[in-house]
Image (cartoon, rainbow, N blue to C red):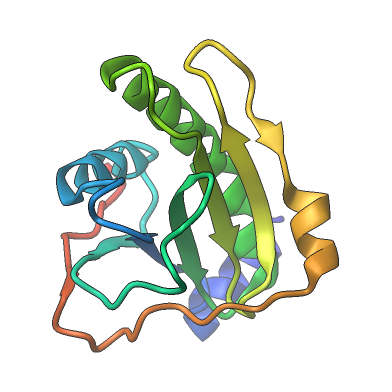
Length: 166
């Protein structure tokens, strides 16, 4: 494992960029997305965490869920899968806490985590603050839908400082 880590550092593929993109800012606000970004930063990753806000809405906006897309941009799919597992745990806790704070008639939260190739690494639906998330990963992978991350040079991506391990 140490050899793999050393090779990643030499070739510069040991870092990733994590982008959080709510589908509709009326459902998941910028403040809520920034809160999740701060929680992800507590994982002590050496990866950059950005929030994409003010982008054009994707689709018609009529869904049964409040949608959050999380992009893990890296040259290493294995690294992306490792990051996705940790980010999914934090996102689940965030979604449950968020549902506790919201009024009772909120729609469930759908969270999809995409890898560098645009394919789903993990997806889930959080329907209730006290309930386990419904794992949608297998069903979403069968759809074979690929999404593109928001433009990395887009001015509306709020960049934040990278965490550095101490």
